[in-house]
Length: 341
Image 1 (tube, rainbow, N blue to C red):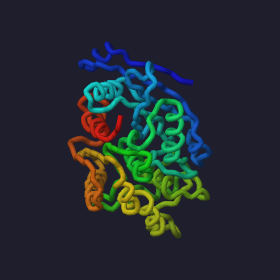
Image 2: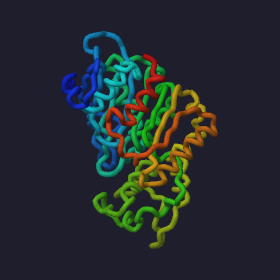
Image 3: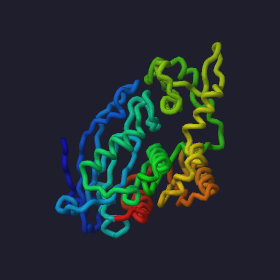
Image 4: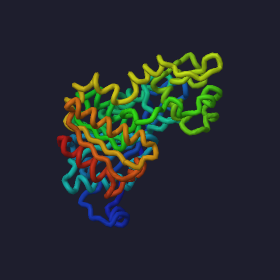
């Protein structure tokens, strides 16, 4: 069932003190995803979907280009983001387009956008279920030049990965503070409390820093359906009562997780994209995220992959949807250059 709501021009004027020529509308739906059904950790297969429609969509018959936005949680397209989209379109920095987000939350744990039977097939959810549903129910222009994908944090990681895998589908990509890009400058092997991880009976027992995150990462990229309670192998295993690095698991993780490890294989795909952009905040408390983003930009350059990259003040979590924020000042204008109307 669809719940429709629009944000009135006068309300935007009061909230943001700016003049707008256009006012888009947002529709909320709930869809059932086959890709997320039957996961071993019990991921909900029903997902909220939020669709921004530009001014004039309801009255016309024309088709529009589209931007997909991958967040880390259930992040609705709210009045602030609607105002930002309206402003970018009104000022000609973004063609009138459809903008889509959804519920990407994963409880319990962090969504590392794995694609398996343990955590659910998240890349398939985005690339198949979500995209097919949206583009079957709305007037969307077909072809990569009319379709972009973007995201924030692990959502940015997922967006870049999908563009890397499917350049014939997504013509351009923008990542806001992407993580899991490259390795930092400090070993991460013993960051979590592995004693806690291996003794835990469930997610509620993961209380120490990094424990839950590393379990979620393992579920996404080292799944083992025969190993409850987390159904995953780990980069540190317990052997004869001792915690030891699991070299085979480390090797597998290195082959499947970081964007830097995937890029050499998919470099030709990245070269096909019309535009690649990203930015990151240098004050992230996890310095590995900052170093990783820097190194990943260098790696792209070393492969001759043109891209736009910026390091700025901020911590990676201050990406509010405001008129002077990075969504408005960098992401939307960047995608607007490559998104054909």
